[in-house]
Length: 193
Image 1 (tube, rainbow, N blue to C red):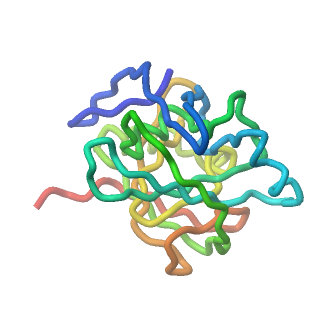
Image 2: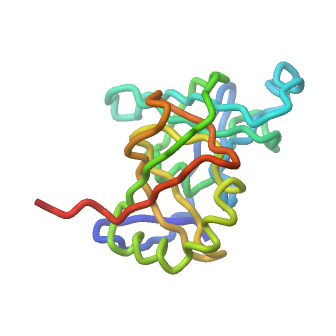
Image 3: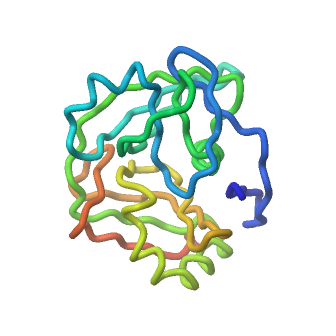
């Protein structure tokens, strides 16, 4: 079940979210992680990489708004079609809407010393607290690259995910790779003023 979000922390099901990639239509994938899967034609230049790569995605919304940017990890997955595949929950968290063309670039990102995140809502905070042990154990299986300001869907169980926004990173760069030893600090949503 894809993770959905509406105002007030209400969860919704979304069935048609799709991200298009370089060179063709895309398909959402039902996955409980935040890793992109690349088309086979893009894999050859990356095959020598022994570690998770950071991928920078750039796109312009269909309504002609300002260009948007996000970072995802590529952990070796290959897409079934000639398109970038992105988990449906991440597509929604990033605010991607169809139709969409994505510019993709592999980028260098340092290892995170520390990443601070806040829950997007009280409901997300409740999920984090209830699933803290599972999140701590499985965070590196779900996401390896985080960027300041980006919203991440993190699965607390097989059926529930919480949305967390990255508020700060050490070192203070745009995106970092999470690894064993990276400190992850998660807090409740900011109080309304």
